[in-house]
Length: 338
Image 1 (cartoon, rainbow, N blue to C red):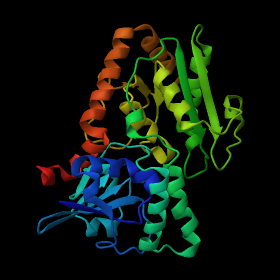
Image 2 (image 1 turned 45 degrees about the horizontal axis):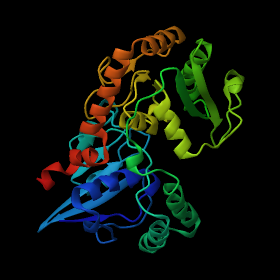
Image 3 (image 1 turned 30 degrees about the vertical axis):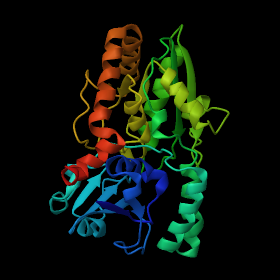
Image 4 (image 1 turned 30 degrees about the horizontal axis):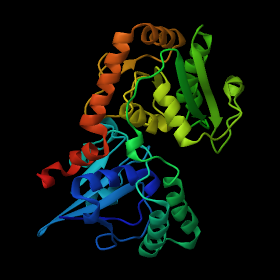
């Protein structure tokens, strides 16, 4: 079998799934090509084709934050994988091909030299307009700032340490982040800061558009950049982590990273669908987002080691079954590989 990837893809977001294809088919059998793709526009998806003898199967993995479905891609493919699938928000005529997928996260799969080569060769294949070329090439630079999937392995955490750093997202009348993701994260930071004998390290960093809401300024960190190696090492050390739907209520990278690292996750309710539910008390611990509920959950997980370890085990088992690179791809192409 051969797998052909659309060279237009945004590798900063889709390397996770390319890794899954490498694991399933072998990297020598997976290559970028313009053979099956029109190359007319960049998109928020990974499009790929699997050749199995005379059979050709077309797939889309839509990683965008929005719940919307790209009709052109939907019509082109045989199976449409959707990260932020929301059945209730999807027209019935666009549900038949969709498979709900768990969120991935940014990983590094190529050396710097190979990334440079692929950046150039895929730019020639995709032929982006001049005003988009710089952005296209920058994705390969961002890809190299990530860590390989092997870096995402669970390890014992520190019982008296919590680390949590998040972007303070811009908020406006359309995307009311100050009423949801920003507020819930702020409450988690404040709860952790209030608990005696807990070493808390974290807070907000500004996103590209700086949010100057006075409600959050006391939680801003002086730095605006943390090396990925340091960030993941501290997440591994953190005895608990906090998740909430991110920009536009999407599944963020944090959720994927926390599952891969087997963390005890406190989370506000998830809005969009998953391939299987994350169950309260088994894979995750849900709270409403109110400060008193967050505090009770933090204190519970800090004091109940058995329950905390139970959630850690459940989170990693979910990742291994539904959310790893290879399992994510198997949701779409498992039948082809058997």
